[in-house]
Amino acid sequence: MAFIDHIRRCNAYAPEDYVPWSIDGRIAGYVRHELRPVLAGYAGLFVDDGALALDPRHTDIEARSAALQEIAERLHRAGIVRNLNGERYALSIAGEQVATLERGASAVLGIETSGCHVNGFVRRADGPHLWISRRAEGRPYPGKLDNFVAGGQPAGLSVLDNRIQECGEAAGVPPDLARQARPVGLVSYVMATEPGMGGDGLNRHLLYCFDLELPADFRPTPVDGEVAEFRLLPAVEVGAIVESGRSFKFNCALVVIDFLIRHGLIAPDYPDYAALCQGVRRGPQVDH
Amino acid sequence: MAFIDHIRRCNAYAPEDYVPWSIDGRIAGYVRHELRPVLAGYAGLFVDDGALALDPRHTDIEARSAALQEIAERLHRAGIVRNLNGERYALSIAGEQVATLERGASAVLGIETSGCHVNGFVRRADGPHLWISRRAEGRPYPGKLDNFVAGGQPAGLSVLDNRIQECGEAAGVPPDLARQARPVGLVSYVMATEPGMGGDGLNRHLLYCFDLELPADFRPTPVDGEVAEFRLLPAVEVGAIVESGRSFKFNCALVVIDFLIRHGLIAPDYPDYAALCQGVRRGPQVDH
Image 1 (cartoon, helix red, strand yellow):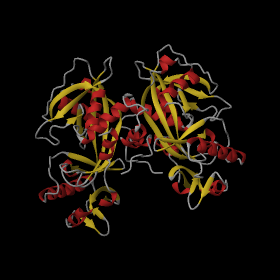
Image 2 (cartoon, chains in turn blue, cyan):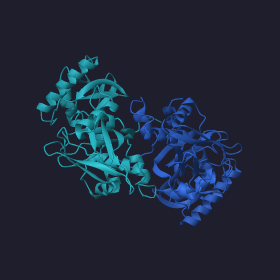
Image 3 (cartoon, chains in turn brown, blue):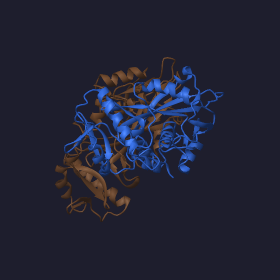
Image 4 (cartoon, one colour):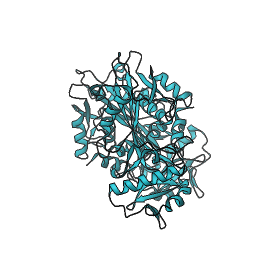
């Protein structure tokens, strides 16, 4: 499975399978066509007069968030949303937060969500080594390999604060060390959900990426139960694992590819170089 | 001029102003509509039977390159291509080189071309400092600020070798030091040419980016006459110059923005962060 196949996997979707829904006249998300009549039937929550929209009687963040929570719970009872976990994501349009939405419903309703991924690495004479994790059994994507630290971006917390909190919760990194995690860009993609991803919908994800150089003697500790174990491997070997198949959780493979590009371990003589560089940042936000 | 305005500037074009032309059934470039009858009139070089194409009698790299050279010279004599400088760019389709084309005609014929941009920087306690250059009078973009080292990517030279050659020619960097310039990704954009850009056409550019950490006592020397002077400034100050207007050559501003993102000097709390990250790498090469 070449690097480019991971890009393709994370950008595989057919636009014609989805219909947009709006809040206050602006597109908030995309749902599969078969969900449209379901949502349109939620009187007082959604309206569908030629276009699907949150009922305009909900005019502020609190009211919209309460309506969306009710929608998430109904979709969960209907078996369309698989899991609710009580975590709230920001629902933002063009950078402005207009509501919150239960994390478990974010893909089914196709809103843009964010995550925070930290590459913990150690500089060595033979090149950078990456700390990677294996996800715990009984959690989503059980047994899959993951980045050093990765977590969703909840509403009401800045990305920069979230990286410090996630470093502590997932790997026991003290705040003073976690604060050294440097923002290095982001990975983005738009992807039809696959079976096992919590419901049929659309992943529209921005993953904020950080590099954290760790002391040679640092040992991460699983704290919150998400991680089964940590391992330190040469970054090129981590790249070889990504290339070998689907051992990594789908989107974490892209974060590894981005790390390898920025550290010169995927270089311009690699045949797909331009496509990889552009491919880790799909979803142009500037119109011509 | 906000960072995002530089992204917009380098991605400003109206697709409907251009028509594709092909080599052997595959799109090789895009020309303005008004150029179509001119090219179609070059019998034996171009054909236009409903679609514009290089005359299919030219079946290999040498023959196509010779035909394109003849076209470049005719366009130059007609005043449509402003300058010829004898440098050959590779004309590649999906990564495969199918011909070469005189650099001066590349925008008028709208082929995808590459450049090699090296960020020379010095690590200091107060953050990275960037070496920047000012372009010589009497050269294209006279007096504009530029990256430490930047040059077009000629045919027949690898990108990795080109960075070493350009570092030597433009700034007097010895090969052993230049070899430490680490590939860190690329910047890409599609842009209608502006007045003064060598002819009316389309810039389709990939800029391969490198970071070269320089010793504190290193002093670059202009060698090939392209550069008037070098200056070392805090990277945040270079960012402020980019934000202040158009002192930088148009595309070098994007290379600076990419550097600031990768070094954490433009961080996720910057309002346009996602748009900037995606904006420096426009031109998706992976289809859904």
